[in-house]
Image (cartoon, rainbow, N blue to C red):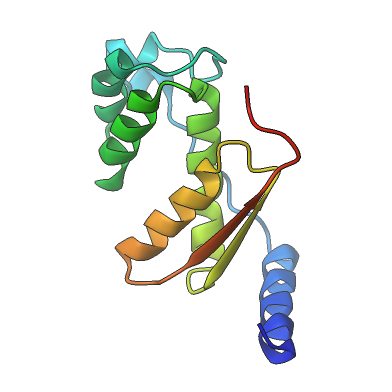
Length: 139
């Protein structure tokens, strides 16, 4: 990126930081089907293929959600809480920077946040590249 692009991105970031942050969309437990409400979203237990059907059924989620859930659950390496955290952060960052072409995921762990930002951008036709950095591989 040249200096003009960096200045533009910095200006965009400062604009976002100066405006009030909208509240995150929390999913009410009452609105969830019983099979989902029984899952603890803050659980550190790893998602497994058997969890995919329950999580895919969340109402109010975009069409991309079931595909992400299927992929993450089939890998069997990601804690449940990280899926929900990465999704919420990705939705907020994508809304704040809809046309940003480069994603830098620092302390990336599995790199899910970067993947989600790539997918959310691609859904709208925005081509992005991602760089994931971490000092150690996740457990």
